[in-house]
Structures are given as structure tokens and as C-alpha cells.
Length: 389
Image (cartoon, rainbow, N blue to C red; front, side):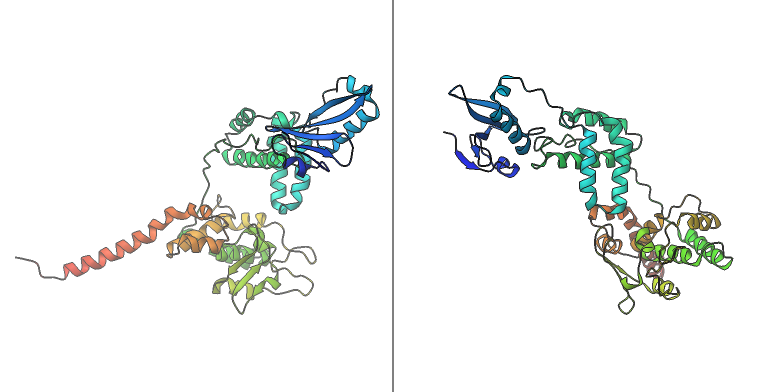
């Protein structure tokens, strides 16, 4: 026997229905929802010519939500002749419409740089592939084919797939029901192997970079604050935006630490070494500007470091080195100095151990150095014994 009860029909109530359950709506007499196996259907009970009749409205899911189905039920109750006419097939929501809403709602929770990335990949990859297709009809095979077309840029293809997956999961929510729960077509699609570009500066290259920074500052080729920003990136391993938006109030000189209230991975401390502290102490402060790396506009921080960096790297004859490679270099030197991967991950502010794991192959170098020094010491000891005749 079905379990019948009365309650306001809402998305939450519909999601809680068990097979056979029937809700009689308390907001509109005659309106009901019933779950049969995996599907929930809306219907309206009424009397036509003295006989009780049931009119099925449709299954839960776009366009039928509690609100749209209740409006349809109200129309049928007001004019029973509507029940005799076939319901025109409603136009399903397109991917473009749903994605736009998702990015507007979900995007407000993203950090500004992440929001820019989401919008860009949506525009360049997702819209050309799925724009006019009803979101409820996008299948795993469609997604797999699109992902394969993007294979020339593996990292971009994987990120586009991640954005698409976020949109699909958002569309499954009970409050929206654009797709059935658990139907995300991005699940089970293998990501491409990404060949991450990791460039570490050698000791000799770091020497050339240091000389280039001195020359650029001495001859006025680069602004002092840009030079300070580059030095801080090298000496702290911090992300570019963390240095450019650094405020004096975040720095505790007494404890030798920077407390970032917000970063890519949330709140983050940066431990200062003496060299980095020296760079900070050498910078003047402006009463009306809270930022460490002062920009050209009054009260603002430096926005773009690319042009100064290009000048410096050309002086150092390092044409292919990116600003982000300075962070990789900090990590490589930390590994060579005997630092463990978990500790280095904390220093860099990695939220996932797998992110730090990319530096695992560098741990062979200090082991090799130790083995070499040990072997030389043992060989020297052995050579000190008298030889047998």
C-alpha cells in the first residue's frame, strides 16, 4: 500500500520520497506528487462531470518543479478542458542558459582569478561544444568526444572538463533539477596526462639573475618596487599575487612571518628568512598606501610585473624563464637543502600533497651528494692503511 500524507510539496519533500510514497499538497487541493521506483511524477485529482479523474502533469525535473507543476495543476483545476488537450512538449533548458546561471551564482563564491579562468574556459571550450544542446540531453559520449577534440592542449582540456563537471553537478541539485541526480556525464572520463613545465634555475643562472637585478636597479631600468617583488618571489616561494597584494599589516617582523588572510588555498603563513626580511626592511612605506609593492596609482599596489620581469630576464640571458619558475626554483633549492616534501608543501602553501609530489624526483640529488661525500671519506680512510706485500 502506498504511504499517503499531506504536506507542502517542495524540492526537499520530493527528494525525501520513498518508492510508493504520495504527497497531497497542502497549498493546492488536488495537487500531488508520487514516487514510482526512481522517478517522481506530479498529478492533479479533480472531478469532471461528477466523476473523479487523475491528470498526470509530468515527471519531476525541468521543466517540472513543484512550482511549475503547481501552476499547471491550478490551470487544470480552473479549466478542466485543459486536461483533454495534449500538453505541448516544453522546451528543455539549453546548456548555455543553465551554464550562464550557474557561473553567475557559483562564480560569486570563487576567487577573482578562478572566476576569470572559469569564464574563459566556458567561452572558449564549453559554449562552442554544447551551447544549444538541452543540458538534460548531454551524454557521456558527447563529453568524451569534445574532450578528445581538445587533446592538443591536455591541461586546458582537463580544466575545461572540470568546469563542465562543476556545471553538471550544480544542475543536478534538487532545487534546480535540470538533470537527474547522479547523471553527471563527466564522471568516468579519463583525464589527459599533463606534461607540466617545470623550470628550475641552476646556481649559475641564479647568479646571473642576481647580477641582472643589481644592474637593473643601479641603472634605473626597472622600478625599485618591481625589483623588490622579484627578489621576494625568489626568496619566499610565494605566488605572484600574494606578493603584489601584500600589505604591511600582514607582516609580523618580530616573529619573522607573513600572515595572509586569504590566498589561493585560504589562510596562509609565510615564514620569512633573513634575506627576505632584509628586502622588506629596505622598502619605504607610504602613509596613504597600505601595500608593500607600491604601484603607479595612488594608494594601489603594482598590478603587472611582466614587463619588468622581461627586462630583467633578458639582462640575465634567461629568455624562457617565467615568473612562476621562481617558485619552482625555491622548491628545488629547498629539496636540495634536505627539506622533506611535506615541510616544503607547507612552506609553499600547497593544499594537496600531490601538488608537492612533483618535486619528488629532486630528492635523489641530496642523497647522491651524501653518498658521494660518504664514499670519498671511506675511500680516504681505506687508502690510509698499509698495503699488503
